[in-house]
Image (cartoon, rainbow, N blue to C red):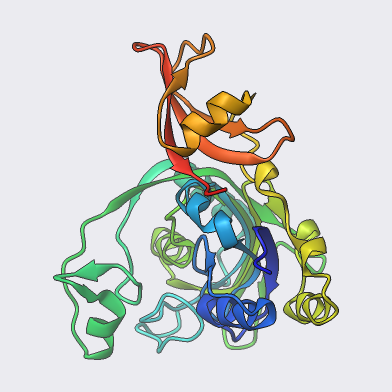
Length: 306
């Protein structure tokens, strides 16, 4: 029987996001599974998956803010902007860089700033993924994207905020809360440029996607064990709880039928254009609608089939 809901997985290092999707598909013996935002193979942490009918909610979940703990290595930049890439600069001296210097630069990145997407990314140029062009040794012009860094702070780790190494490099950990679409490795690279020493992302843990945190995440092995025991549903967050930031309306049986056929329903006095969760009498999510106050109606935008 097909399952429906949101699954939060704690992705291990070494697997792609697609690898995780494939393993969950096999565990559930169903195809309708998709993720809501890629994590690079070296990264770990929260990967939110949509299962069954929930795949229709992906676009709303993809727009959520993300939170990370990022380890940044100071001293040189790399071609991929992370620890998997070849250094593109010689090692710079970092001994004079203090925690106060780093905090000053972090403050400069809070708020909106324009990022140039890295060549090693899934964005496309002329229909071709940038990472494909990069592997061919090509570099093309990329248009900057505007992102927002909501929170950015230096975090103490191992009793120190700045950790220094014998090769002249240094490392610090930062906590980041940012808008969807932000490249944390590009942020690390840009911080290094601003500090004048070069930098790259050395490690990354995604700690939250919206309200979905690591505390709600299952390891792949734990989820696969639950699935083998026929208990996979225990790990799934119900569709009705998937979009808590949206107001919810309970519908009459007549309005449920109208919504399922894509017809508008009365606007219930909503005075602003907003997305609304539309629930049946039992609290089950049947659709996501958009209020249109100028017409006094709610228009279904995403309908979950019965």
